[in-house]
Image (cartoon, rainbow, N blue to C red):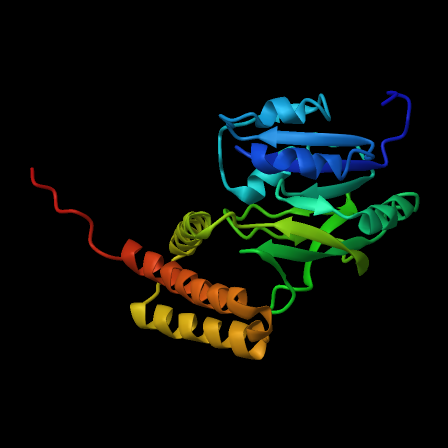
Length: 261
């Protein structure tokens, strides 16, 4: 891009070992004014793939959580607007057209995108998963992410109006059961550590009750049964993941290994 051209939109990604998804993701936003990549230590072909789309590639392996990493990545952006993406997401043509119209306007709103997830062989349109409205398009100088270790959120200190776009943000989430369990275990541990640092505690009975409530909410209240076998599987896995969060926090409260010295 010509350095004299106004940078309206900065697409920002934090990545690590995302070679499987990165080409498709970046191809869906190749029209953006600039693409910012912040890598946290990839050992696959992620950086080579990213280099086909942008020269604004940075590496920071001092991991302090998802929120801080997004803050660091946004600091490299120059656009009036930021579109924050994950590598396993793709902008549909309909959504791209909406975004390109919006960024011609003054940056005075935050926009939510309707995320439609593909999981275990189908798009999940119920189970509380759709429309999964995520705030991702926002004015760079007016909003940014908090410093949470996990489940970071976009902060809106100026109380800008929030609107929702019509097009879908496609999300190709879990590759298989093992990927789900590994990813959920990572999130559960980060959640437990964050709560533990805040002085929070939990019991195993809380984990059981919250897990059961999660299953009932996803499968019955949120009509997960309409998502077929995938809906049942997701409700069971989500109940398990909820239990593991509380069990992990409970485990952090237990006595440490005695000193044999």
